[in-house]
Image (tube, rainbow, N blue to C red; front, side, top):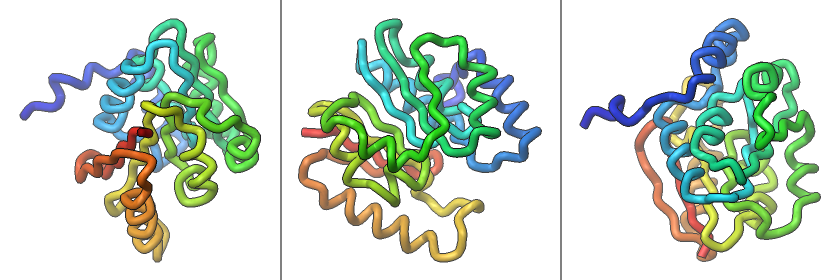
Amino acid sequence: MNETLFLNPPAAVNAIEARTQELQFAMASEPRTGMLLRTLAATKPGGRILELGTGTGLATAWLLDGMDAASTLISVDTDEQVQQVARDVLGQDKRLTLLAVDACGFLWRQKQASFDLVFADAMPGKYVALDEALDLVKPGGYYIVDDMLPQPTWPEGHDQKAAALMEQLAQDTRFRSAAMSWASGIIVMVRK
């Protein structure tokens, strides 16, 4: 299968990738993850979407590309320098709110079942404050994590954390889930 036929990256991706390389930021989402995020975002017209871990904004660009005009995206990161790339390239999009705040604190302040899609691409919402992130997903909404296959950026011992997370997500009976050994390793969960 030729997956590249389906990529068709958003226009902003080239500018973000160039700046990502300049910053030597090695934790950006890869194109196949973006393609999936765009597709899932498109299933939520008028949706409220949350991204935990903006990074330089690559996944952010893909999510925006899938969203309709009535949808909104909140993207949270603590690294203002890295997030500045997303602010510079995507900040004019009125559907996007970029927050440079602690994601755990943000999660604790949110109302349960208030997001149609949560993409957890950072420690908070994935390895820390997982229950808070899962509680935000509306019935019929998605919770998505990537980087579940071994990554060169993983610190020593992270493989055990990833295995424990996969076990916990697999046992969560509030969701139907699919784990894919594809792209960087993705788990897609849908709230029942």
